[in-house]
Length: 99
Length: 198
Length: 121
Image 1 (cartoon, rainbow over the protein chains, first blue to last red):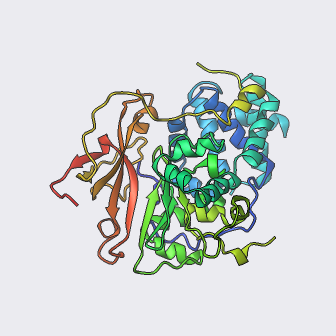
Image 2 (image 1 turned 45 degrees about the horizontal axis):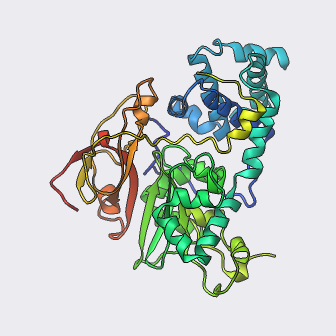
Image 3 (image 1 turned 135 degrees about the vertical axis):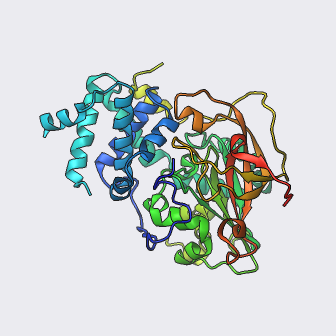
């Protein structure tokens, strides 16, 4: 699909920002988001190509404004809902219960 | 932008659902995080490059059959299944990008840094590699050829940096600190001996 | 086909090799050195053919062998095993005459993305 993920050749994003001695994860939740995505993949619930496409389908405005591991998180939730492992709204309901 | 607390809550909600539904067990989550934090990383790639600099036969295997050569050193890991290693010389400078997402050789370099996954790098590395290299402080003369590798599909790319001058006779262990993650992506050269902080 | 991710399974994920290489006897449409043109397509689904490559002419630099096809697998299709090539494009072909004459870009493209050209780079 022709969306924002296809960035090769674009202008206007500014300089490349680097961080010295960058940690693997900046927040504990990032590692968890990755582990839960791997769960969906290695657990056989969805494949890597479906997962990549789920992230590409995030609307361009959101894609650029959320962080990398948020895209993984949203891609994982979208795939699990699509595959019927989760019901739509189940994550939001659980957020209310545990907040 | 979502606040960090909100995202953390959303992750916790998903985690509790997947634990409850029996898709994953709690110790497995910690195990996966440990794998990415501690076992996969550029220290693996540095070992591969230092070996190639010290052992011409290994270097030949690394360039002709990279996947198996890397496995020889014990790095038979996820996202290293189909590897390509490209050699930087005084005439050719290689630089790796994934314009579509964040494809990266986890087996030898671990997870990619934030800048590699960022829009500015993905957008410009393909169309203006010399400009990007200059941002990293790497000047490539007009007499040399720059080759960009867009790892858009199933192959994973690693650069074999040029061996720095004045390193003849150095052991593999002493060479390793000269091999930085960025030099194996191709945005910088390997460190000179004097640049290594003990 | 789903499985529970136990600690033991998680430990195996270090090695879990998900190679996309397919051991299948599929003939290659192109050989190293052939001139090609990337198809001008605009699929609404998943593709690994970026916009900046579409319609551009390049040369087959290497044949990686037979790989499963991401565009199909992303949509519940089969593996559609086919050759995956490293294709070389000059920087000037992709970005115009102002690009450095010596520079180039290599990208991996499946057979289905390519059509032959008369140009033998």
